[in-house]
Length: 289
Length: 296
Image (cartoon, rainbow over all chains, first blue to last red):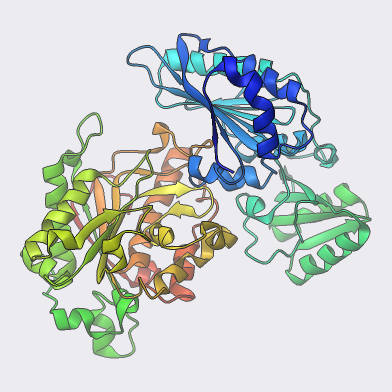
């Protein structure tokens, strides 16, 4: 499978079914995908779409993105649609990337990977910083990136982001596990949803051994707490069944991680300062003393 | 030039290949037995190497390269230093980096080629490459490499380093992605590479101290540092660069915000693969030139 170029918007309708089949895009309805392509204007705030839409899949994404593709792969990347927009003379190009992830929860997860920036009301959550807008909506994670900064490009980035988000009609659900994090002392901006230790290692480094038995079928959420008795990260992990959770519990204890289990859910305290700071968090998360 | 000259024999006398690289400048280790070996690294900076728009002055960059190499080898004459590193019979691959947002400067590649030719290496025995090193005929018969790239943060390895720069010699990059790319040092033990990297040049002209977005780049997170870090030991070179990036992050963010994920492939390259020295206490750092806001 190689990456596709969709030469003009007018030919998208005929090409798209082929793209969907070849990409192995699964059960996503073609109508939804067409609407994503076709509803994004060619011209936004003085910036004009150039060249073709590019479509990258799980093989070709590495050709497009050097060093960051693994993040999208860790959240079940289906494909990435990309288009470059050229601005007025002297203004930087803007790159629009739309990443279709395995589920809305995964799109949310990608969004939480980098939570720097100012909140903007785009999609189901948007952040803007230093010429880069990120947002998520439905199965999609959106990125609008200006290859330079100016007042005009900033406005164009936001306008293009709004247009792209508007083209996605689907509304997704924030992973229910996020709401299971105790509220007291939680920094909401610190919350990340993930499936892999590699992603967690970017938050709190746990090393190579997969003590907590992460995997694609495992959902986890982590958040940073500051309470009167200290600070810590609280990790909640939902396993497919109790047996898997028990196994992970054993691995965590062996690795010296403070954990508590309730059924198929495991709570773990990471990097507590001081050491006892996490006791209350564990109790709040899954009960017990 | 405050250091004594190293003879070619000194240079290659301790260990072999990449392991010897860690001992370049390790004069202390050999003479007293109990002292652990050290690595010599040169940081050279010149503010005027970059103009107001961030463009590189090729002549100043070339001069920096020569001054750095001379200092590294303990020579007063750059040509003599280059002759310590390479001989006319060598076939040399210059392992560059083409990442479009922060590539190895063409001016640096040209300066390296110029100096290799000045040593007497035949032009047809010199090649610059990054992504196609496995099929490049010069790289395939290379007797020596120069390894050069800009330092930048990286979402999977923490930092894009000299150690990491050789990943294009491998068949499957994801094989080296586990544990924040901890196995990267093993690449240096491959037969086609081991003992052949004679010089590492970590480009610190506009290093990148933070990554953002799918394209991992924003002008906000590079700054005009105007430097090169040179060494034979890739681990010592990278460890030195990492300290500068950590310091810059602290300065920029206003709090301790470690590189994420931790670039521990640098330490692992030392402790597990033995290709160099990562302990700052055992790195002999020589500073040359402009040292304002050097951050180290």
